[in-house]
Image 1 (cartoon, rainbow, N blue to C red):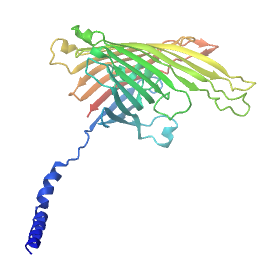
Image 2 (spheres, one colour):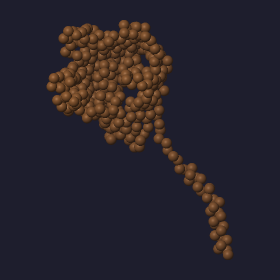
Image 3 (spheres, one colour):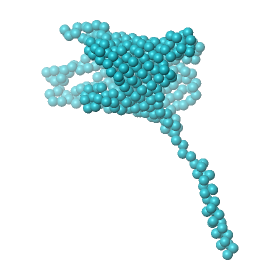
Image 4 (tube, one colour):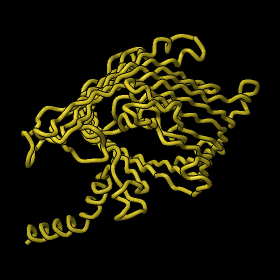
Length: 390
């Protein structure tokens, strides 16, 4: 009997004290939520055109909004996803919907397969929709919200594509090496052929560890993009002499140099390109002929804070100027230029507004086989740009 009473008392005691035991254990069990870095950039403007093609045309425009999500994906790994909300303006897509649509610009996994201190080599691999070879580097110096960088504005290639890449950071601030293999030609379309576009950039910062003032930020970036696209006769067809399995060259190369200082930013780039096109119908009566096209672009820009040269407290006013000289075909010698000039007022650290003028005009009109060549349609536009970082 005494043993039975003791067992019952022990059972009741254990039952009554169970919450007191469980609660402290439960309090020690915490769910760790990975940190999420969410940011965005909003591009908007008012524009007024004065060229002969659209004189007095004007509009308020929400160009695009970038929404970026970054978060870790385990040890040494992270994910970046950037959604591009933009206005549909390409025919025939705008025939379906003329408003704003969303697509991915960046969406990739990054894994550091070599990690070390700042004085050592570090290396990261990327897989997914990622940066191409030079545009992301140039945008460290040139403000994209004013205009696209020179090579992108000229249509040589876009800033992102789907593939695999590796970024190797050199020790002691000597620079970096970036290489990628992507689908080509850009992220705006699914893969259309079997060809891939390898590319490589070397960025050197030789004075980063010196006390050379503005020159300590000097970066020199030679780069190369080897592109290839399928023939439009790749599948053959009725009446054709047969399918064409070989690719057409779409190569680009160049060197960019720039330096960034709180008072002055300078940048210059020479880029060349070689491409192939096709004429004819790939038939016995109209044979396929491969046509080579080569050209180059020389671009330079400056962004200065003139008042900061005298008083560092007046650093919100910027003067900006850029000039591109393009030769779209060295055979026809059809040249054009791009000029951008204006002022920027930084309302705060995240919001800025600009008043700028942009023109893209032909410099000559060569005659080839009795046909006058126009390198580019005339374009003259006054802008009020606004950028918001959030």
